Image (cartoon, rainbow, N blue to C red; front, side):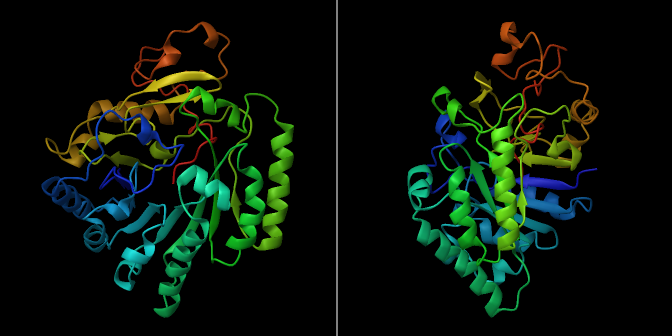
Length: 345
């Protein structure tokens, strides 16, 4: 049964981060249309099995004209918000904060890295986090909890140490380290993970872990080398993703067009939708036989694995997500999210 919904009330954003998939889009970013938004929120409210709603996706939810109203209407669910936090001072009030369980805020380094990578002034970002904590303290709120997501690469990994010094004073619940997933070949050499033994990064993560203990912080680490185990966070958590145009897609990776570089191999990504909420209900799409079949396949690991296949270098199926070598669509065989290199919130 459906327990978790990622709701993209907008795919617009107030930033132009260098690692964002949005740079590759052909379609212009849009806010969800009001009639569609009302329909979706009403369905989510009525669906008793849905426990958690994640406001985020490929846009910044706080730029949506429906952000505050969405939080209000879905307040009986557990609401998570993925955000760049730059608009907290402008939009975050007691009434909104009191209805949110968790904020996941992107922060990939210190001053220079944040300006170069996200166009964000580091001190201003920290001031917005301070605003969140002030709202909580002044109103006696335990939540929203605050998680920081750090997208790690060769460019910024050493920034994690001074960043922990500062975040230790910001009431952070978790720091989630997720690896860079390159979109272009010129980013490919910046990754920290590998197919085979990666002693250097194991030692680096060990140092980060020890430092976090001294600072009283909890770090969630990704894998640094390819492991056999595969788990899809969306399938295992009975989750789905609704785009700003109403498409019901299985995950972040298949939510929009784009590209990625997997161990040096460039791949074209396409949106894979099981139905649109302008035409069908969420329950109907979730229970559609093709969507059920897809989830069973992924849950039971009945799909191939490209990164550790001996024939990968000569395979013609590795360049897109249309079909895998079992003839199944979409092709999830190259997914680095399932291999715990990249994390979903």
